[in-house]
Length: 118
Length: 118
DNA sequence: AATTCATTTAACCGAATGGTTGACTAAACC
DNA sequence: GGTTTAGTCAACCATTCGGTTAAATGAATT
Image 1 (cartoon, rainbow over the protein chains, first blue to last red):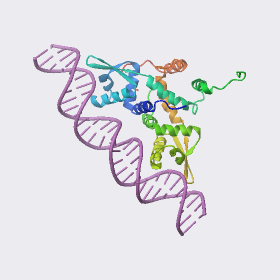
Image 2 (cartoon, chains in turn brown, red, blue, orange):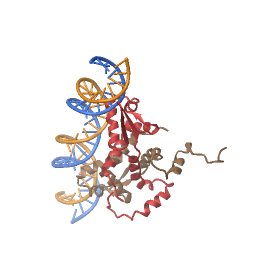
Image 3 (cartoon, rainbow over the protein chains, first blue to last red):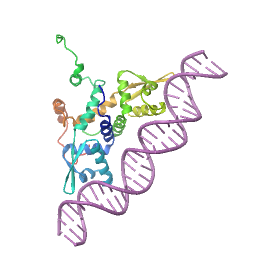
């Protein structure tokens, strides 16, 4: 099992390592927002918020649709799925209730039930 | 549902945003390793590797047990569980096979108003 | 006691981060 | 056409990051 696009993971985890950006994602999980709307709750300049949004875009976590003079941002969850997949490998180390999922995820390591043998 | 220790999450995601550190975690998932063993596969000075390990410790991802002159590092997966819990909120956005979890999440998650922060 | 081995610490370096302000572009409004 | 509105871009700044080398610590070896 090898790490697929390390650069993508770098960007995703880096994007998630900032509370402002996590808050923006949380906001986007409710509905799409303009740059201004995303920036509003945070005590920083619009330019600073714009940089954060660009970091999210670089990571593939947000997609932007320019509509007139406003830029509408939407959550792009596939990148989060990448991070989740990476974490999935370690889930067995802390979780007992994910055993079934664990087996499903690692389909090449599925525990065989008695009688299941060929 | 509120983000619990943002600083901890900052440190965890920051630690995960580096391929060297992710490789070290992967190595530790097999068995505990000394600092030297963790450093060996990477083309960098021992001092540089030592810094990476300290970043992992800061994030709570690794615990160190000094034994004589060697420092033995072990995976500390609770911190990964924190990251996983954060991601869990978003799982419903990409996963269809997590419907049960989704239901669980929704059960203690009141419908959110626009502007509600993470 | 001297040396080697495992590791950290300190000082340094260049690049990236996260913020600022000010100028710019372009769409919307009167 | 002129002004406001939405957002980016560029320059700058302090701090952090990821790496280096060299020196220091401290346990093991001889």
